[in-house]
Length: 110
Length: 110
Image (cartoon, rainbow over all chains, first blue to last red; front, side):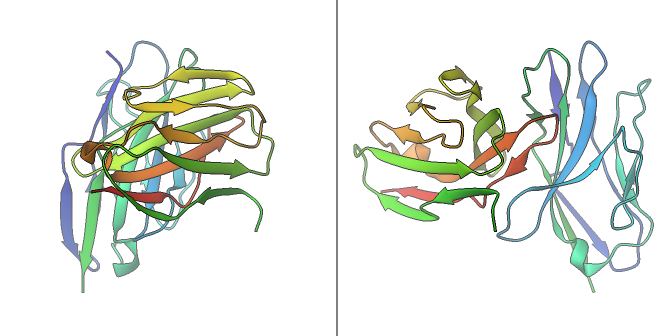
């Protein structure tokens, strides 16, 4: 079955600490992976996609096909990073659909 | 600001009433999607559309109806609202793999 799992519902860190939001997936084929972010009371927006291999707002994510993971990392968390983060995947047979994980709420404390 | 809009932004209704949530996009994207966002469940796909007059069920379609007579509009109707349909509803559109989300409609069914 095609699935995205985010094992942590809530992740709380202090400002300046490293942060890693976990994402594991199950997909038969070659998926395309994304991280979307939703700041408080705002719409979801794309943060990263694995094929672009960019660093956005200090965040990076590497696709590990062996471990079927796409963890989101930032070396030094900032208070403005507090938000809901969703991992998502799509593939050639998804008809444009995204499969989302349950989301992880990141809280960065001062 | 052009893009994707939803109306109303907030709606309170009563059990058994019919409610229609509107979604409009100005990019002429082929794909449009409706999600509901619930605590503990993340984002779940209700219905999606690959083009005008082409719609298909997502993960949780029961109790909802959609139509797409024009490319830019994708209304979602709750035919007889139930309390379990209290949620935040997001519309999205895409032309490629990246989806662009509307601001959401917070629906409360009393």
